[in-house]
Image 1 (tube, rainbow over the protein chains, first blue to last red):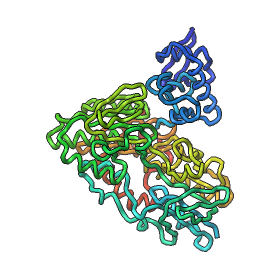
Image 2: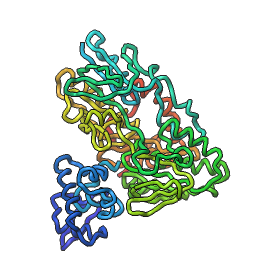
Image 3: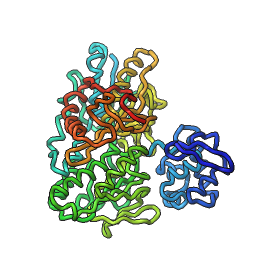
Image 4: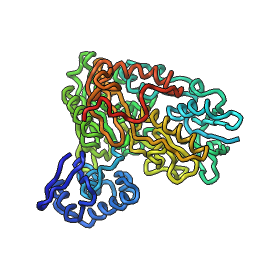
Length: 105
Length: 409
């Protein structure tokens, strides 16, 4: 298991490279992780997806799949891939400070 | 008289019927099982059909032959479940009442979910190996194939037996080598995952295997559509992978009766308590096997471990006692790696596949996450085990809870 360093703080990561402790997460950290993932700017549309994922996780203990994101977040699949290239569910959950969706089994 | 109704007579439904029949008093219980077909397929066998190791005949037996005496068998489609009225409506709109329901309706492939996948080229240059017809047609095609670029494409997770696409490629590598035409075949894996497998350590080991066998991997590929004319896969971000022969692993979904009942998630899998196997929010309804939304692999071994948990919980539940058995997500998968060898992985919700020996530390006989001949025989022997022990509910010498014994972290 690795760690990441942000502004003088060392944060624990899980085996998938996502934040190990959800309590470490805040919006500035989300911007930091996004930048490391090659997304320099988080737009309102990014935030809509991130917040939707966090809401579902709070309620159900797992982040939603891409299929469910498309169905329920109002953002279509093509746009999701533009917002979070190469795997919207994985990327968005990482930026949202959540574990990788368990649906990816 | 209390009525237990089991929907689906596949691996999960058959095992539950065989485990429960001897312990539920016949004077007090009526058990009914519903399935759409008289045929029971050994699904792990489908993988071997394209390469001529098994014929389709080797994978099928009469369903009733594996169900216990005394259980009423209804061969019918299922229209929907009405949990409020505790009844199930069949395709002819007749109804079956239940006091307890076990949903074991499985998962199936849905090529129609991907634009351009299911068209006139389906069965000609595009195949699946998850259905009897698909795997048989692919076998016929391969016999006459002169070579080119063979792409195995995973559309979307979860899929039944997540190692099967890798096994297909390993077996294809051996098959074309034996036919003396490996140099005429490009083998590719195109996957939405970031690597060869879903769990990091196994992904690395299996990734090395693919590389050694000269199988190219295109990871993080979100398949948007298939262009049959140009013979290419197109991703949501417009990247493309061409093919001559497409072996597709289409979107897997739960049964349509689950959708008609309004009980499923976005893929018609039933939300299920991941430890007790009780359906979320439904009274006296259990779910087992591929039909669940559990974060465990969709595979026969997983269903087998679930059946032991469900058996205990069911007996406690009908007596009004609290359920004490807890499913831990245990999976145990043989992975064919070709040339008479295989690997074995053993894992659960929390512990990813690790190297070591199985089931006895230091002894084996099976080695974990490492290639060996005995692992291959384990896989071939499993067909016998399936029909003669597993389906009949006879205990196997592997516990339902995963053990750390023999594993090296």
